[in-house]
Length: 575
Image (cartoon, rainbow, N blue to C red; front, top):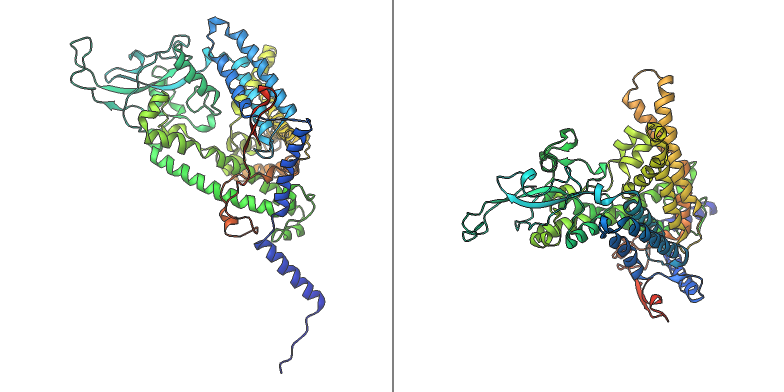
């Protein structure tokens, strides 16, 4: 017989605990996660049934888009200023009704309802109140012109010279969708004659600035594009983080006053095929990473609002509890990365849809718009380089160069409008301008996310997200003041790059760590992470991470038909 050594009881219990934690890493029941999502849907139905809130209908989105679109179609001499201000008042009323009384679970447990409604009000204010779109805004459009004629005398208007001149609609070429701004074309045929006896000239595509057009259909297309743009890649208010225009494009748009210091060398411009490959790779990467982040959050009770931030996460991240601040740092980083990868995933659809379809169906793309949708320089990455932005520019670089700039134009327009109300001596002071635009932008961002928290079905504290963004403005101001005023006194010599990078990295880490909980805890409490962002989960389909989920994630309907007593109480409800 063999002698078997007995194992002490405490070691047996420790071994059993580790085996249990290992099994949790492989299989974790999602019952609490699914039950919470169903509870939110049940709460929504109950509140609507009792009359505490009202359903959010699909037609609300059409109304919110149709109101500013109709106002932008009114010509200046037809009383557009009064009409646009009146329409903006109606938009405010609809937005108030949505945020105050309407609820929906779709879109991060109702988060997107508040966020998008609030930003839409800000964006409409920028277009209808803060700016005169007929005089200030111009769009890049393509035209055809004789091959030996330049843009300045091609029969098309250079809107940089006269922004109040009527634009003209011209037929666009039927060439295939390439990325070159100009493309020579053959004559339509030997039988084609100009003025009866002249031989037709070869045609080429040219790019021009198109201001507010007069023909109705052209104006409708122009205004629709203006409303639906966030970063303005084809507009004269193009966000700077998208990079400069290619040299060949800039030469056509601004032949008389070309600024060569603010243009991209044509050799550096990616072709359409390469841009599509990058976009597709970005989509696949963000999809897979979002699936992983979702599974990690499903396993952690903190992310579904069922545990306090002090409770350690499941294995293997429970070992972070032995490190001071390790659990908090892990959860804040996973929250930030979850937001980042979700935005990357959501914005990755643009290039494959617009660039891909315009290259595959060039004639159709030219038929619906004169914007060169097949130009790869319209499709810049949503996010900038993180390490370069953070190390070189600190907290300001994180928010102004790395983070997405989807809301930037609306925020900065509001800041400039407020500056226009100040006395001239204050409005022209660089320090005051910088402070006003910074605090207005982050105040509006905080308000936007606070309303997003308010419209969620979970138990939220909207002040948390608002404070997070206000504190970012404070951090940027502190950082800027230290660099411009205090640091030159302390170190009156040129600072080495490694020291500057170290200081920026430490401040970014410190500031985001101490302020991150304001937003992260509210996101977790609100049920935001119970949403299913992807239709098919490879991880759950392979029975990894969570048990019994399966491949298909979108198990609940998004819409439901409701027939009320009145017509405005009927429609497709967004669930």
